[in-house]
Image (spheres, rainbow, N blue to C red):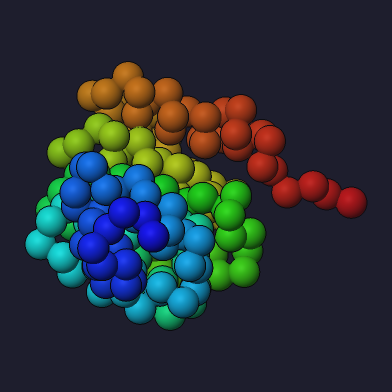
Length: 179
């Protein structure tokens, strides 16, 4: 199966760090679903950034309430790719809906911190997406988005923050409907 010597969940998580095996391992872990969650969560502690990033990407699709605290902690990972994957998983509702989407009380503070000061512009852009989820309900989110839109050194971050800030296209599209 898969052409791997070992196909247990732990081995597949380890293969996420091997560029030749990562795609097949990722697909198989995704196929295994909730049954592989313990191994995926354990992979968040792997010394290899590629494994941690792959586990964050898997949790984007398989996240459950037991994984949420671990995923939130990954926004402070030393590797930018891991931080990007963690912020995406926390901000993306496409796969999760609102079943376990974290509230502002759990994710807004780290998102604000990274939007304002992460050294990597791609991380700041992902943080803007998460901050943007709260732009209709929390004035801190609005202030942070407006500050990033007006002053971030990266044009990409300024543009994305503008989408989520009041008057921006995503802000308008996600506005609560009255009536």
